[in-house]
Length: 228
Image (tube, rainbow, N blue to C red; front, side):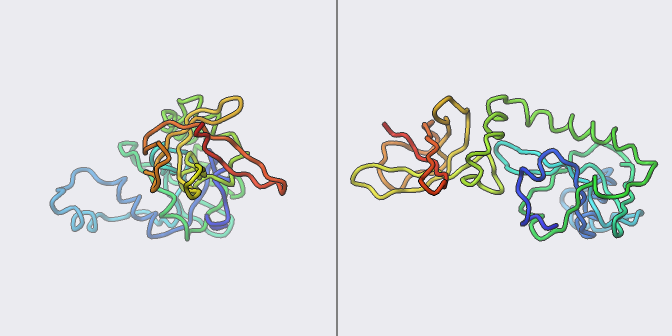
C-alpha cells in the first residue's frame, strides 16, 4: 500500500514496514556514526559502510504537535515478499525521525501482515517505540481532540492537529485559514489561528478562537470560526 492511500487513522501507533533501500541504508548509516567532522559531514557520512543488507525500515507512527505526522525509526531490516528479517539495533544512541512528506511515494506494509524472524524481540522494540514517543501524547486535551473523527475531512493530511476553518464577517469575503486544535469543548473547539488573515476579521495569527463544527443538509462537515 502507498502512503497516499492511507490516513493517519490507518497508521497511528501501528508498527509498519516501509520498503525503500535508499532510505533504509541512510538510517543504517546513522546507527553507525561514532564521531564525525561536521565540516566534512557529507563526505564522511558517504564513506560509512553498511555491513547488513537492508531495504526496509520498521517505523512507529505518531503525531508531533508542531512538526506533524512523524515516524520513529525503530530499526532496519530486509523484506522479501511477505517475509521480513528485522535486525537488532547496534545501539540506541540516536533518535531517528522520518517525516511523512518524505514517504509519500513509498510502499508500506502493516507489520502484523508479515512473517517476522523468530529471533527478533518485537515486544522489546514496541516498548522502546512507545516510551520514546510518550512525551508527544502527554496533553490529554489534544489527545481527545485527535480522537474527534467528525472533523477528519477538515484536517491537514501531514499535520492532523491542524484543520481548515472558514471565517465569515459582514462586508468581507469568506476566508479559509488553518488553525491548530487545543481543546474540545461541549459545543465548540478552542484552536490557535496559524495564518495571518488577508482581511480585517479583528484577529491575528496566534490568537485563540472558537470553532463551530457545522454539518450541511448533505452531511458535509465544515469548521466555522465563531467571531461573535
